[in-house]
Image (cartoon, rainbow, N blue to C red; front, side, top):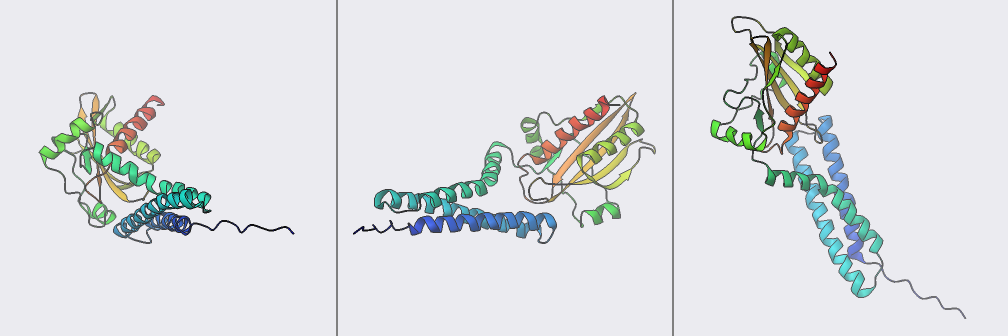
Length: 258
């Protein structure tokens, strides 16, 4: 008479690790989607993302406990525990990258190509309404000096164009980068300066960041200064500097195709 051996019991810790990992990934995805769609405000989106990180860390701890139980007692659940670990690791990947950038880079959330005299954001009604009343406060001169060492490539852009041509080129470049126009003041007046404000969204969470561009006429040239500031948090993790350098590269590409 054939006798069937009972299957090895499952590791409950492995199953709980899987459940926590799935829940963490779900919360993280919902936080990002709802934040990008504007269904919840940025602080709530960040709080939800923080909760997802905590759940993912619990899943990793449970994975470690499951590995111990499975090894010592021979229980089933190695596949579930391994899947939970990788899902939790994916959930924690972006926050881990931000943590690395936070250690590597100075605490800055407002970057300018002109450290001594950063461009000012427009106070027009259209600009203030587009920013929901937010006005980037700026940084002390001593704090801005830390930018010089961290982001040496963030420099003023000088083009061999008159101010009107440079103004049109910046609008074209900003459109190619997907920036939203907020306010503009064409070059002219006694100083000949021009000014444009834009809004751009962060890559993952879709939060609004504010950009202003200043034009100064030079003999046969135009100097273009940019300033990019985050609305939320004291640390931008290098996002504003990357935005400015990417814009400069796109503008040069536009120049090369003229």
